[in-house]
Amino acid sequence: MRAYPLQSMDFEDAMKLQFKVIDCITKEFQGHDFLNRGDLGVVQGLNKPVTTHKAEKVVADIFDAEACVFVRGAGSAAIRFGLHTMLKAGEKILVHRAPIYSTTATSFDMLGLVSVKADFNDLEDIKKVLKAEPDIKAALIQYTRQKIDDCYEMQEVVETIKVEKDIPILTDDNYAAMKVKRIGVQCGADLSCFSSFKLLGPEGIGIVAGKKKYVNQLISESYSGGMQTQGHEALDVLHGLAYAPVALAIQAQVNEECVRRLQNGEIPEVKNAFLANAQSKVLLVEFQEEIADAVLKEAEKLGAAPNPIGAESKYELIPMFYRISGTFRKADPTLEKRMIRINPMRAGADTILRIIKTSIERVKVCL
View 1 (cartoon, helix red, strand yellow):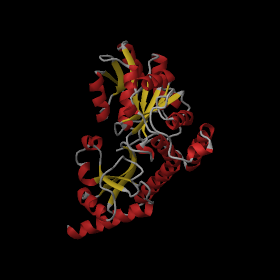
View 2 (cartoon, helix red, strand yellow):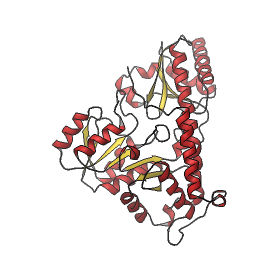
View 3 (cartoon, helix red, strand yellow):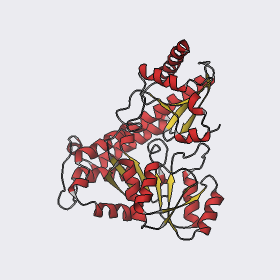
View 4 (cartoon, one colour):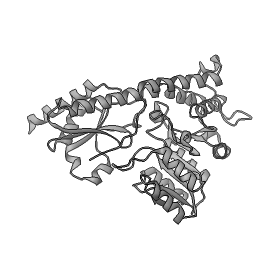
């Protein structure tokens, strides 16, 4: 089995991105503006808090986008709202030939969209499908992997679509933003959509960044007071974005160290270890024996989280030991009995390997 995880930013690039976040903040906020909890309500002339308006401009600047808007409903709603600006009910959208993420599939149903599939790993197949389906009106590209063997590059897929047919492209950047050097809009897409909760930010706030014509449509439609992101929430988005790049780069380094040590035989009961994006970038550990379920039970007793909260949210400090994804189970049903996935979160490699080793020892005592 071979996976093609996304290339994470190294520590140096992560620091540069952190510094860019702060630089963008200082260009928009005066000191006293930022050192508070922001304003509330629908301010006359903006129909949203002044703080939120400024924070959205900061995020647009961070990701080199024309405009940005914060929406309620996290990353799923950000994608849903973005698709709404690009397409009408009954229109066709190009997607990868792979299982569509569940909340995205729900959005397609809600909006009445018709999906047309092409293999994004094969640029020629994208061209072929676009020629065969001339009434395709937009495209959705999920940045992280949807299948085990996905290996497509965002930049190449965006460019291939745009050259073949100049249609709007929306990218789902969840689990990729602040980890990779360039998100979708920085690769030429029209909108990038992702959750602030996955970037150490507040619950429920989604980010839509990209072309003004789409962002402005969302702003004009989201005029009610209850739909506004309040000032303190907008500031919390920026607080999360400031710390996320370095934290996620450290997490990536821990993943790589764990793989190296496990592949070098530090824990004999481990048959294999590798990295994959499923959806977040995680460590996959395969055991020599079918002990996955038992190891997960013992790992929780040793302090590992048994399930995600927001999948890399600000609350998730302890490492997460979890069953493998549905995609991997479909590829090989037997893997569920001998493989687990681990997200280090804020933990170090020594902690991860200690929990694996001790869990296995406890399981062996009970066998």
